[in-house]
Image (cartoon, rainbow, N blue to C red; front, side, top):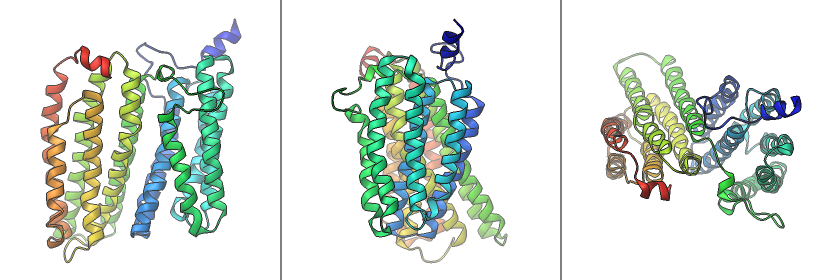
Length: 403
């Protein structure tokens, strides 16, 4: 009897008031990714080239995948149980090594990144399989499938770290492709087949809150970069104006997410006949665009503070425009998946940013950034009203069927 109670405590409860609650150990675990996001923006600033942008995309996708896969796991496991706490603490150590190696991942720390990332992904999944040995058989088999795919990608990650730096990208891209396509293939493996979507019965409210907290992490990093850069500069009307613009942009992104997107997501998930499927589709992939947009926004903030006026180069203009563009695109896709609508405020915002691209090179960084900030502020205010209107209605049967 005691063994059964101990086993039941390993798993997250379902369907009660506390089932979606985020624990303190999860928040502690997230601190590693505060550092990772900071490393990502700094590494791009140090290698502000097209090649640097490609590397930023690859490492950002890897960091996000490590985090979201862990969020999936903790959606089933109880983080307050001692075995799961120990797992998260071990992952923090690996995550700290992985994050520390980001800035020179395509140099001499590549092997450290490859090994740390692989151990993070494979170790967490293998440990989950072990924990599930007396849990739901179908769920355990599902994690065995995931383990097989991660072992395959791990070969590419570690080999990429061993080979010459010039070959690293050629091996790490396939590794990432393997990991990103595996869910769409149901983690198919010979003999044991593929996973059914019914197995992924996630706790929607928990996954929604976890992803919201990661957005806070990314936005917090943007605030830190802006504040740290501003503190080192000579204070004058120009730098103060740039600082205010950066802050306004960050607040607008916060407002768009928490006063519109998250609110709509919670509403539609609560009224969906399959909340787990909606949460899985909406949060796993679209939030990568949001995080990427915020990281680029932190880069744009530093570029603005360093050189607010004068000639703008194509790279700076691209970052200033692409950062909010990715963020709004993520919102468009999220709303399309969750509410089955194409949100007009975000779509108009994307069109406005596209229009600015035609005149960007004729503007100073300050003026271009100010224009994008105005777009974000407008979208945030309009999006809030739009979201309130969506949430005032209960999704009908058609939505529930398609969710």
